[in-house]
Amino acid sequence: MKFIIEDRLFDVLPDLYFGVVVAKGIDNTMLEDGLLADFVAAQKNVEERFAEADLKNDPSITPYREAFQTLGINPNKFRCSIEALIKRIAKGGRIPTINTMVDLVNTISLNNVLPMGCHDIDAFDSDIWVRYAREGDVFVPFGSEEEESPDAGEVVYASGNRIKTRRWIWRQSEIGKAVEGTKNFFMPIDGFKSQNGEAVVKAANELAKTIVDTFGVEAKVAFLDRENPSVEI
Image (tube, rainbow, N blue to C red):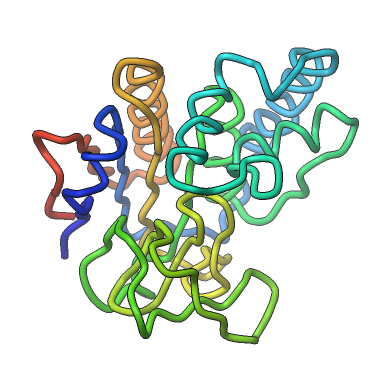
């Protein structure tokens, strides 16, 4: 199985840069007090950092808002995942604990201010793409059972005709979400090489090291850009 970025996306957003961490054989039922404490601390740090911030104009968020506009997505109506998380926390809200791996990914996402996903790799029936939506694509919104179709030309994460996230990094599908019983994980990190590429590398390596140290399994790390748009996972 491969992770592939559609070439023509780089014609629109040439600075796109993706990190990906793949880890298999994880016991996601294991509770780790240290990881939970880190998750709580990450949210407290975000609240302190962004409580008075103008989030729309914050330099860690503006590259995503600008990219959404370039892709024809209204960033005020459809906020990228990291902006939505930070906005919620900055207003005094909290992200509930989901399961060990999802909490870990959210912790690193918040600490590095990067959109990160946590997916059950066994729910992918073919190569994983970041591509433009096609006729016949199907999306089941998180928390729903109703199928919907993405808009024509919408950027999505997809495997076959099953859409894993709509509007690039806006909303995740019910199909492929990481649950307590998930053992094999695909965890992408979305960024821009010249703007937050170093943070993408840091987050990927931090996630991989934590997985190795906590679960004792191998974690594969890779990075994709215009010159390297695919990787075997």
